[in-house]
Each structure stands twice: as C-alpha cells, then as structure tokens.
Image (cartoon, rainbow over all chains, first blue to last red; front, top):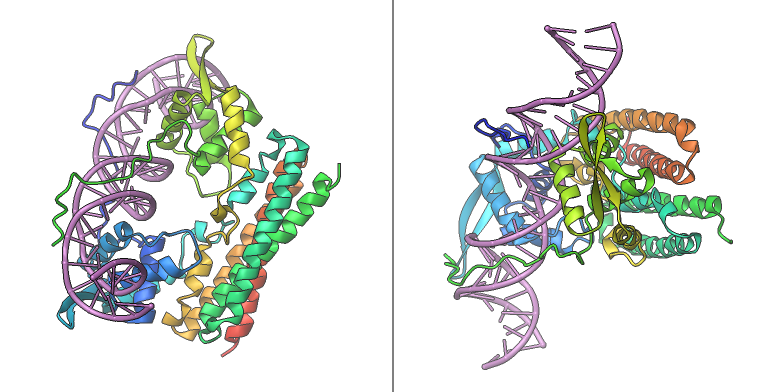
Length: 196
Length: 196
DNA sequence: CCGCTCATGTAACTGGTTACATGATTTA
DNA sequence: TAAATCATGTAACCAGTTACATGAGCGG
C-alpha cells in the first residue's frame, strides 16, 4: 500500500523573487506599466471588463497577487488619499519594469510557442463517442457560436483600440484564431459528411 | 481592516456527482472510452507522450482523478492480475459513457466557444514596453519557433493518425491554429515595420 | 546485478476560484 | 435616500503541479 515512510516530500519551489512570473502576474505587470499607478480594483476592472474568460479578475486572485509583487519588489504601494478615503496605488518599480521585460522575452519557455489549448479541439477528438446526428449538431452549433464570437471581436476591432497598435494586434490575433477555428470546423463538417 | 466577523464563506461547490466534469476529467473519460479498460499508468502515458503541454500527466493528477471518477460512479476498477502482479484496470460505466456524452455537448458553457487563451498574444499587447529592436527579435524568434512546432505537427499528420478520422481532425485543428498564428505574426511584423 | 519501464500511490504546495464582509463615495 | 459603483480585503476550497517513495518484472 505504499506507506510513504519518510518525512514526506513536496517541491521547494520557493517563490523566491527570482522565479519566473506566472502568466497572470506578467499580465498585471503589463497593466501597471500601461496604466501607470493604479488601485488593485482598477487592475481587477481590466479583467472584469475584458471579454476574455481566462481570468475572472476575482479579488481573491488580484489582491494577493499585488501583495506578492510588492514583497518581491516588483511594485510598490503609494498610500494616496482621494478625498477622505485612503487608496493604495500600485506602481511598477524599476525591478518591476525589468521583470516585465523578462516575462515578455525572448527567451521564453517552449510551451509558449506550442499549440494553444482549445477545449473545442479536445472534444472533437472524442466525437466518435456520440452518434453521427449529435456530431453534426455539435459542429453546427460550434460554427454558430464561434461565428457569434467572431462578430463581436470584429466590432471590437473597429472600436477604440485603433489608438494603440499593440491592442489592435491583440484583437487581430483573436480574430485570426477564431477565423482559423471556423474554417477548421467547416473542414470537419465536410470530412465527416455534412449530410447523412 | 475588514475583520470578517462571520463564520467565513467559501463556495459549496460540493463536487457532487452531478457537477460538470473539468476538462481533464472529460478528457480522461474520452481516453477510457477509446482505449477500453486501462490502468491509471496507461492514462498517464497518453498525456506524457502527447506533445501538448497543457497537462503534465502527473501521477498526482491522474490517480486522484480516477479515484474521483470511481466514487462518482463514472468508472469502475477491475482488479486484474497480470502474472503475479495486481493491476487496477479502470473501465467506463454506463454513467461514465453518459457523462462523456454530456461533457462533449451541446449544450456547452459559453467560454468554450470564445477566443482560446494564447500566451503569445497576451505578450504582444505589452510589446510597447520594450524597445523596437527587442520587439523585432521577439517577433522573429516567435516566427521561428512557431514554424518549428508547425513542422512537427505536419509530421504527425502524415503519421499514424490517418487511421482515426477524429484524431486526424485534432491534428488538423492544431495545424490550423499554428498556421493562423504564423500568419498573424507576419502581419504584426509588417505593421510594426520589419526593418528600422 | 543494473537499470529501465510498468505500476501505484502520497505529501506539500500553488495559483487560481467562489463567496462572503465591510464600508466610502457617487449617481439616479 | 436608495442603489450602484469604488475599494479592500479574507476564508474556504479546488484541481492542478513537483517531488518523493515503493516495488514488480524484464532485458542486457
């Protein structure tokens, strides 16, 4: 039964100031850089308002994260009073700037360049488990929904982001990935036989 | 200081047998379906051998997950002896089959259809934080690395997967997403000015 | 006999999540 | 003045991760 006699294990991992930032941390460094000093709440708002669902912008993620950045010396908190009310503005330090640049790379770990994860693609691999009719429903519904997201991304492109060329590129990237997905779904429909 | 008087919170979430499976759980259900009864180690191998980096196939993930599936009645363990050695073969139950079908959808939660997360794209949004020369290096390196992954995916396509049309579609999907990324990176290079 | 793969786990930790509590300020 | 938003957190939980421990069976 594998009694595990010894004193147990667990990785050290240490979270030392030298360890590479997570994706969310890098992202927050970027936000601090482009917005300048702002409150944790403002950082949350960026995620809350963005249509991307990868991060919720939950307080439970953002507040501890900012505290982490502070104790690693990547950000510092300026106690600022707006009116009577105290607010903590987080600003990027020089080390924070450097950390952002390092996170941006190169060099970058290899998984960054690899095929991004796609929940739709994973599912298609197991489509053999459901009858052909349901398979067709799956693909048809996917086409419809992806198309819907595509349209809302296109609306974003024509919007405000034309100001910042990098923000525009991000939207274009999202667009490109959705278009590729749509084309691939169409291909799947043809290959699996749209009718019958 | 927000003392949080009450008896604390935390979501119930409950992990009841009715709750939707995670992506990894759905994936494992799929593996159990397509391979038939197999050991936890065999399930791990699938992730270990696959080039996708989203899941490590670590024992610490797979063994508890299979135990979870078992206690939810989605899989059952067959005690089997190969030679003198005892092995636990996990097999999909009828409920497991149904769970797989439900995970495959439709219906599916909306985030499934949305823009998949891309660590490269996130970084491009903050490329303004580094000097133009480094920006070009970033893009050139990205093109090189993505191209490399593209080639290895193409090699996979010509390989064994031609047997299963769904596995082939998965590879084609990966290919499509890498090609779209590459084209987008080229576009980025043009827009940001390849030279100067 | 050595080392490799097969095989089964466990322990510590981590970076997220939801859900709550609290209160000031602004706006309808 | 009621409701929304701004603002700051905490507690419980969860599904992963790395790293270890253990041992059978097999090919050289």
